[in-house]
Image (cartoon, rainbow, N blue to C red; front, top):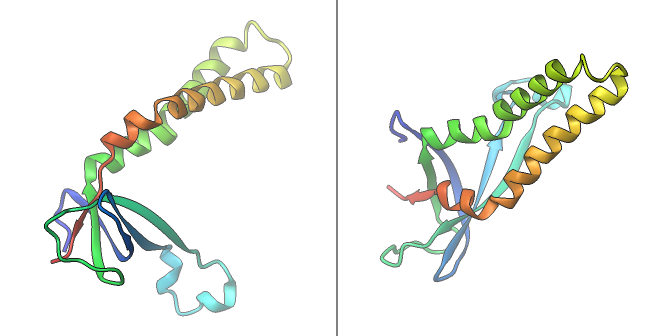
Length: 140
């Protein structure tokens, strides 16, 4: 059971190496519990593979069902990096450049290029960010 300040997903171990344990989790949408999910076609079950640092003292083996957890603050940080900051960059560019650029199509293109530049910077720092976003396995 996840604590109040944790995000947890149930997964299955696919592979264990000395460095990383590969865990497959199935992320289900809210539709997965609906009785009519087969009729509407809107159900979205998505499989994700996460690489978690291997605990050398763990007795886990491939095929075991485990809980993959991270801190809630990591999820909020990911939302800020992925959605909130790019939206702010987009809005700032649109509102500040609308007096300089009269053509709306060009204004939109420049603003989207600014957001693309932001995501490029995030991509450049992906190694540093991957060290900050740490998952761990809880097999209790």
